[in-house]
Length: 409
Ligand code: CTP
Image (cartoon, rainbow, N blue to C red; front, side, top):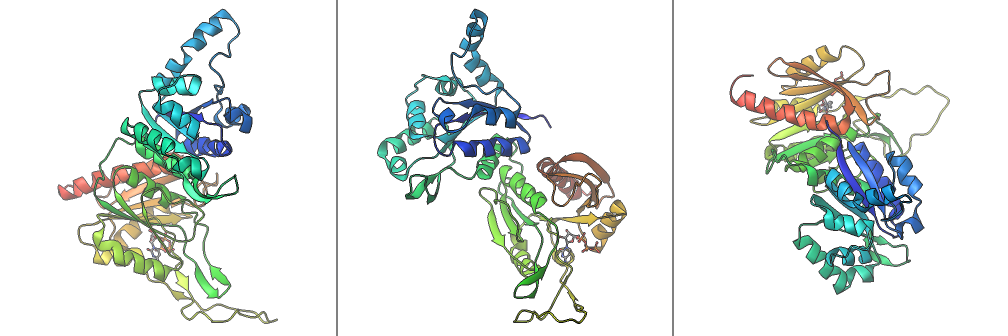
């Protein structure tokens, strides 16, 4: 996949340091990031931070050049930057920057770039609540929205000025996901409901202990994010994970396999595509003791009962839905994926080796998977980020659905 060139404009606010997290989150999603900092932004964060993170020179002024040739080159640099990037994201967008953008001012590099920019513009405001609520700010935003700018609204919370209210820069992960969805031109899941399960489950042993596994939820969250960007209504049934849910998805949080089973069965009828990424615990204690189990000198064995197999039950109940399962294996991956495809009546199973020598698998950002389909196809996808793999899984799912409907698979 070609990297997507993004230009990140950093305004002068306390939240400027979070723009560094945004740069990283965008790069994790396969973007290249070119940074432009206002003079005020440089009072909060050093340009070196962005240069080191993005591996690129950071633009800090309009006329930083020394020689005549450099002056000539830099005098048109804002045009070149505008032309070579697909999207301009401004974070934090201060009240002052919004006012300058709304009035078409072009007094420094970022505002000049904004005027010259013909691609998508995403504004991420952050400021004190009173400044945010001020009619001047709201009118400037309305003007910018009318002209096509997209806005990631600030969040409510405790602000640097000590007050509590709306004005905190949106979470960088949320902004990055929004940027990607703004760039996604395919709307091939528009109006469809996609049900995704993600993460591990936790099976209590007593009120303070549980059995779980190493699933991070990253693969499932990447699928939910990719499906939402392509227009789907996404229901994300998630076990306990440490991830920000993608913008616009309906999140259903669960802990145990039984809770996941109930949530999935409740939503299965509305879904056109079901992706069972979750690493569901296969065993649990049916009657969890009400009190903490006390230590003794004796050996302790646990008596475990099987949990319901959610995917197998979906396979039994499914009507028209496209059902996609996962098979996390430490050996015989393709054979196991094919066995699970048949025994659980799936349309596709995504097999991945969780004993990869490079640590790829459960906790990593990358994955290397094999798709096996109902039609008998086996397709190896090369090592890539979980976000890229997510897009490819959806591409193949849609192709498979077409083939199944045409009766060819
Ligand atoms: N799965 C499920 N409910 C369970 C166990 C697994 O829905 N109780 C689903 C997973 O979400 C995944 C698929 O079944 O999509 C395969 O999970 P995996 O753990 O690889 O397979 P198991 O059937 O548990 O078989 P084994 O552990 O023996 O490999």
